[in-house]
Image 1: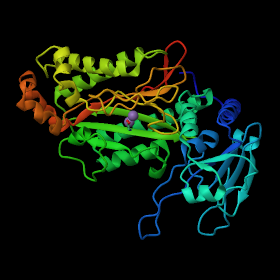
Image 2 (image 1 turned 90 degrees about the horizontal axis):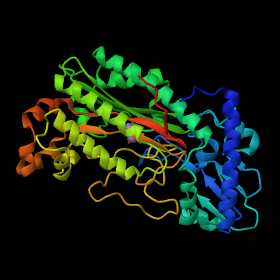
Image 3 (image 1 turned 120 degrees about the vertical axis):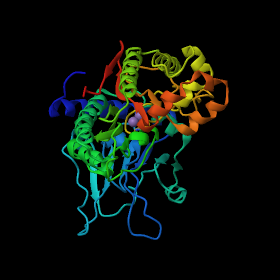
Image 4 (image 1 turned 60 degrees about the vertical axis):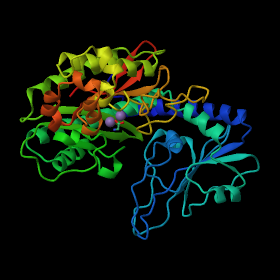
Length: 439
Ligand code: GLY
Ligand code: MN
Ligand code: MN
């Protein structure tokens, strides 16, 4: 990956991004017979019978223009051939700091109104749609279509291939996340508990917890085998076998989603060589990335490679093909190879083709989130895994596949949870560019 772009180069990339976005919206709105679309940023949810709110992230199509994750109750009006009109909710408030806008290129290209109220802007005569977390009663009062599927589908498709500006933002998000991963690894090796590791991650990646693109998964020992493990133990375990850390960062709305797995001082020797095996497998899979490659084929290849690794490490005593056919590899890795990445960590339009037709995942792979052919500009995660998940392995014990598994080795590894290695990669016209820096 080329180095970080300067602020002025980023401003120029952002202007190009906005010009292309305006053109794409103009074409789409004209094709759908609309005079414009109103994008609502959204608002946080309040806990039931409480005055406290959940953390918030703005609607993806609103962020596509502004990159603003935190702006609540604000409206963006896009019309063909007109400057975007932006009504920002910024009430006088001595309880909170009112909203303000960043020093970024987009601000100079929009007509901006800082407003005390959160009502949508007055619409001129014509046919409009409103998109976002709005009530149908509001849409009816405005006399506009609410989240019409053809428009949402077309706009989702417009987020599949990233602009150079978006790729630069994803690259920055990766750099910041990796600074966190380095510090988190140190905290683990120095004996920190899951909470200490999370705090080290947040500190080094310079972000508060509510700004994360997703809740960090900090799995020490067996917790690494809980795919979306959600707690942070406050005490370290007596014996530190492993750390699986899946943690990200946002830059101008764009998400990094990186996972690393480390052996601790109390690890079984077999675990460290399994980490090496999964890392090498991930690199081989990344090297296959190019336009025209079918992501479902890559996912199937991951299973064959997992079968090879399990056989090499004597965890199974059958051919890789037999390990796949008997469902052994899927018990060791029940999730997909990866997903599209952008303004949402699991980005939109992963399971439709370019014309919006559904591309459901294979029956055996219900968790696979990306089923498209790759195209230049797509950004995907590559995250093969290998876990000891008792509830998935136990049923194999009963059947014929159970005879091909070395249960003693599985038992030795059970307290290590699992391994996932995850990078973020952009597809280029000739191949790929890995946005995730080395540790
Ligand atoms: N961090 C969630 C995922 O890897 O998809
Ligand atoms: Mn991911
Ligand atoms: Mn992840």
